[in-house]
Amino acid sequence: MGGDDALLPVEPVFLKSLRDHVYGLVRDAILAGRLKGGEKLNERHLASQLGISTTPLKEALRVLEAEGLVRSEPRRGIYITFNAGQAEEMMLARAALESMIARQAAKRVTDEDIALMCELIVEMRAGLETVDVLQFIALNERFHNAIHEASGCGYLRRLQGGQNIYTHAARLSVLSEERERFLAVEEHQAIANAIAAREPDLAERLMRDHVIRSGEKHLLRV
Amino acid sequence: MGGDDALLPVEPVFLKSLRDHVYGLVRDAILAGRLKGGEKLNERHLASQLGISTTPLKEALRVLEAEGLVRSEPRRGIYITFNAGQAEEMMLARAALESMIARQAAKRVTDEDIALMCELIVEMRAGLETVDVLQFIALNERFHNAIHEASGCGYLRRLQGGQNIYTHAARLSVLSEERERFLAVEEHQAIANAIAAREPDLAERLMRDHVIRSGEKHLLRV
DNA sequence: TTGCGGAAATTGATATATCAAGTTTCAGAT
DNA sequence: ATCTGAAACTTGATATATCAATTTCCGCAA
Image (cartoon, rainbow over all chains, first blue to last red; front, side, top):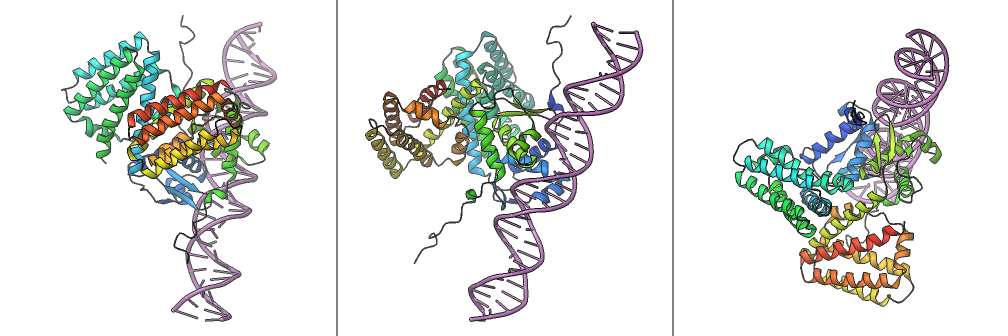
């Protein structure tokens, strides 16, 4: 009994390295504004402040540099580059990538994918008037994930994930408005329809507009 | 004599760190296929092979991981994840980002920007029949750079730059065909017209199609 | 032969020491 | 008072040592 997939390999995710942990800490601090743009970071101070050595910190900073949140000048220092303008550009990047994913999804979507999207929209519509914002947020995420799965674009999905900068508080704040939930559902419905109809151009455009519109709402909450 | 800008600060770019050097070496090796997808990397072997310690190598690998070219499993190893499918997705990512940049450029373009783009297209048109492919490639790049400048989107530009995976050989091969040069000029002309006319939607669509079309040509040369 | 430890070897993760570029400070000359 | 320049100090870059998780290998028992 039990096929080849009865037991999946243990995800290495469970063992979070110090490096990844620190990366998350510093990233959140930057996005939350506790570390402000222009500020200079001192590797030794930061490492001792975190109670770790410089090795994992350096690696974490390297990742943040690759993501464009900090800039490192050899033998000079590390400066935080993130600011409001970059936040807006990251939102635009998300719009560009997410809409390209939607375009690909419209080309490759299966009937099962469509069924799942419709299901999720039905659930969201039911939750329109309820006040369980947390569940609405979760459904929101699952809807976008369904499109990602349908697209089959693992790399684009990953790259897009790196552009997410909204805090949980901002999400909560935005979707607390009933009008915002209504707009989200309507836009999701339109996107799902376009994908189900296998119309890449339309799906791409709708997704772009959706991400930009709701993104600008989020950016205002900062 | 000499204003405040008579001498600009020295760019820290001149002092390339070992880490950055190694990063470039490994990245090129992956993109060129000398390190194949699925292959496992050994930090110590690789470091001694390169004649360096593991510290700068680890940092370089961290950046490659952030870019999605390798995947690191804690205490297991580092595996190369890049393959043909990812190459296509990186091309799509470039299309998505470059077209978003074109869209922004169409919103913010100045008359000077337009003049520069037109100049470059005139030069490219003159070089259509010549066999100086290298110069054509350079003009190509300058044209795209002109759009980047016009857009004012530093972060998007940087993110887009990370999606460039074509080797010099591939570029050379593709643009060696006169028909390909002709297509490139016509498409650039159309994009420049859309931007000059301040039509974001059109500019975005034309740029996307241009990047995808020429990108697919490049991907065939592997 | 098969399956189950457990020791040994590997190897990435982390810590620490050293190197060298860059910055700051201050005494001394003009 | 101002400029110069060398020494002291900072600090990121690099190298090396140690730690700990994982894998490999081998012998013993069923």
